[in-house]
Length: 269
Image (tube, rainbow, N blue to C red; front, side):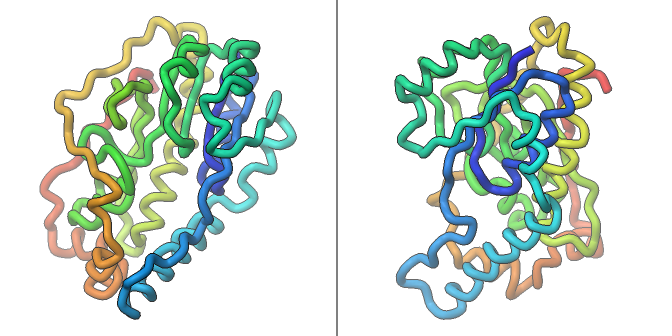
């Protein structure tokens, strides 16, 4: 089986690439150069919000360095081919022709910009890995919102079919987390991805011969789409100033977890 994995270049993206090697497929890895790991501080913020903005993204980087240390080294050695691109290279003829030549059985995207329909037609199966549990948390920054909404148990990963709708495709496989009192928002996000990478490659390997016969699961509701415009650095005051990045502890201690996600998968474990 041939797989094309298209991703960003951050450690979390590289960690997924490393994990996919164990599924036994012939993998081509296309890496899109993404934004800085610590974004520039937006203009017109007060001093406290500037502090929180930088603190938040530094903590994310520290967490990824801890959980995904040395990610990508294994991939460099064992991938069939690695192609480095920039955002403007996506969906262009050169890359499209390359995909036609490879003729992948599965195209998996994670952390790269949107792929157009013409590009996606080059693969028999197209899946997108989304850092959030669909349908409850679709869209952008969906590892932040569960903690902000005081339901950190909804931090997770969803692999779904790639469609025009934002993270609205049918579900292939989902993983969540087991809440730990001492974990913060970035620990939750990293552990959700760790759990996915621990489960998925082995499951895919077991089901590779019948992958075309497995039917994706339609979400029972369209859920909610969270957009980048909904997010503002002022929201970080709730996470860090009010709760000291201890949302898990607050929710467990005060017994406010009123619902739990039902994770879906087309695979039998």
